[in-house]
Amino acid sequence: MSKFKPLNIRLKSGEELEIREASPSDAPGLLSYVEAISGESDNLTFGPGEFNMTLAQEKEFLAAMEKRSNAIYLLGLLDGEIVAGLSFMGGMRRRMSHAGEFGMSVRKAHWNKGIGAAMLSTFLGWCRRTREIRKVNLRVRVDNRAAIHLYSKFGFQLEGRRTREFMIDGRFVDVFFMGLDID
Image (cartoon, rainbow, N blue to C red; front, side, top):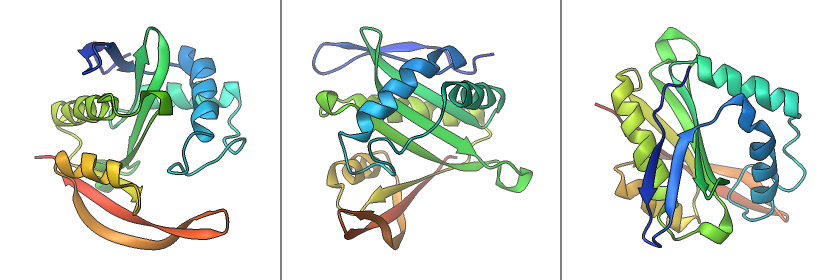
């Protein structure tokens, strides 16, 4: 059962972005999307060929996400093609179920169109409506200025730094932890 009503947002480019909750039937397209983005940016936790989920595993994962009241996987689509994804999982135990971490990605060909802002705004609206989610966390590379600016614009605060979180081409990269209280 869907916990999110699909919506359409007009982007600054004039294109219409459909945002909806992912379902198990999206697994094939989502796996293709993930493989595509893995080679487009070093801001992700994985590179090309490193996301090894099978079709059956992806379907099972999406079905499990649908069943949890404190988890969601949102897709952003342009003309039926997945161009963005945002996943959030709250804690599994009662004491931690109000808080969780999200990750978001956008296809490189669609950067700077306002898709990230639309996805984040939509997601935070869902968080507020649940009345269950009270804290949203994220990790972002310290050199990803565009993402840090976006998150700050939405009220996320810097909460810490972890050194050597990434190693890309033999070079260590730190990450910031950022968080937003949902009240």
